[in-house]
Length: 370
Image (cartoon, rainbow, N blue to C red; front, top):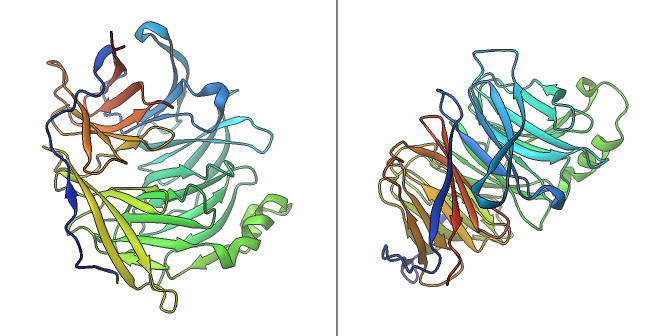
């Protein structure tokens, strides 16, 4: 287990907003009565950078952000099981470029929805419990990973419907896995975190032939030789409580727990002894009233900023790559009082969306400086 190295103290950001960018509310939608747990822009396909999806209840909805704060509903998928509660949705695509939405939640079934026809392309059954997060490999967007309450992470090929790898076992998570993310440039690496308070880094390098085989497999998906990856290459104890969101920022990781802050840290691997090494905590980004679990932050396409909501309906926008961290803006609105489960920053960060426990979606747009 990687321990925090005793070096220089982490740099903590000041909560005084820099007013670097000002945002204002341009729209508010009430989607329904049930909580909305996920909102995500499509960064996979440049034709659809202004298109986003939400997940909540048994519904996945696709919208488009238009000029002047307008949000247009493009389509809606309603699951046949009215008791399903989707917790996560990710954009992916088929090998021919067809946009897919991949959603999962309470039931533990992953639905791959063809966004063109609004029909189910495939359903993946395999997880033994609910699914907390799904993420797409940006360099190969027909690969997705799912993090589950069943203590495992699974790698799927949405084109062929194959479960390629299962990250679980002797060195795996010991409680619900809450978040997972692909490394932005190293295709072999993922990071996962969860209720066992750890962040684990996994490598698929030695299993990559199975990933390639999954694209050309012609037999039944159930006959594919799915492999278990039992040992992560790195285990970090950065937090002392549930870790519910982790994202790669280059080779660094940004993660958060339930203690009112996001932490930027560097995993320092030991080549000889996998799983060990040290953690260098670089920076901390305070987020007041962010002490309940299942609140996820998001970044713009180039990871310049991160936006995170809190349980009181406020959003904090941090500049990630400056040291010390700079609070770009603190967004609050008199009618926004419900816990924000997730935010979505647009490609350039000029629009911020958030989805809330009370079934609302809020749109904030940057105010042009005069």
